[in-house]
Amino acid sequence: MTFAAPVETKSIRFRARSFVAFTLTPEAPLDEWLESLDRWIGNSPGYFAGRPVVLDLNTLKPDVAAIESLVGVLGHRGIRVYAIEMDGGAELGPHLPPALVGAKEATADGLLQPGHKAAPSKPEEGKAEEHKAEEGRAVAQAKPALPADGTLMIRTPIRSGQLVFHPHGDVIVLGSVASGSEIVAAGSIHVYGTLRGRASAGGLGNSAARIFCRKNEAELLSVDGWYCTAEEMDPSVRGKAIQAFLDNGMLRIAPFS
Image (tube, rainbow, N blue to C red; front, side, top):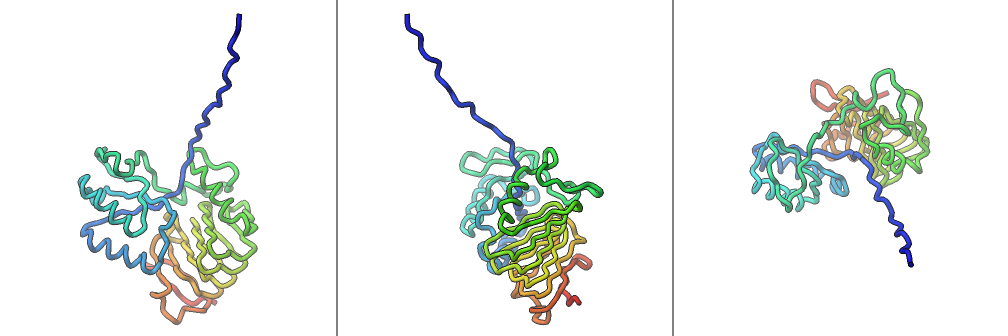
């Protein structure tokens, strides 16, 4: 009598993982919205390259044919739509990105409650595990230090191509920030050298955030989604110590001393 040896099978490992995605919310008239988008892309070429984008269609509410056309139009602009968010549960079909269910807008309050210490090695349950991996990858060579108050301190310059994403508070850079690099922070951004790249403070809905730098040569400054590109900045604030902040819903860039 012979016996067959048991076949060893590898178990498939499933893990839940969340990602931070950018959301585009088209509005009517669509032609004007696309013109505004084209200006953004013209001022910040390659901004959407490699970034996951969710298309929020709850405002526009187009039919399936219009969705298909819009996805194609965005694709020609180098924007890849990973998912579509739209109430009503419309059947999009296999040729379109999947419908997103149960999306929640990221907020600074949700990521770091007042009086709590940030713990990047142990993210809050249900929060983005990818935040930890993204922070580690983005600033792995920038020697970051994370004090108990959630502030991320980077003691070396940020090189071109590096992305620092910090969803737990302020970012302090003791060196300079090179052209082609980017900092995105839930809180304020402080650069003690020259800022040549992009800086987005209040990136998760904090309108009180500010950007400070010793020398402003930035490609883009943004606070809570309101932005100003290098081409749009007044020459009087170029090459100077400045602060950028929101004032009655408008982004202001003012000398700082």
